[in-house]
Length: 167
Image (cartoon, rainbow, N blue to C red):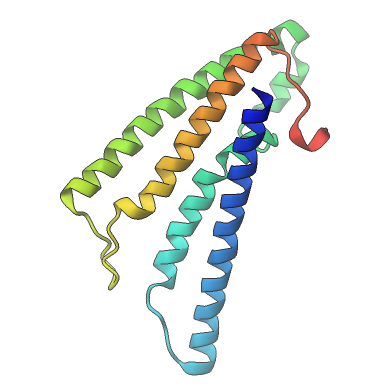
């Protein structure tokens, strides 16, 4: 289970990092073109927006695993150990259910965009299902990770292992 979680974390980190690098490159290209050649590609902002969405959704596994995800620490830290364990199990279950629902509706939206032939309003006329695929893929990856996380949390009785950065 830990190996599968580690693989998902590495994929998440790598793909979201590549998205950030590509986004940086295309923004720099636009800046250079505008500054030195008074030319605009006219689509770089659209492309960087798609890459930003990919970064967020594909980076969710890494963010969750590294402890950078949403949590209300001030209440959690003051709780007794047994309450923390119960909260960990409840948190894992709630996040899992919420993300499954989010993924379901995201995939439905993606399929709807594909069936309807929805495109962007830019000169590229990008079929919208293409950039949304990265969002759906990121959520499916996150769901897989959360299933593993949930079962690990149940097997450890709600005890939290060290965060990835603390190993």
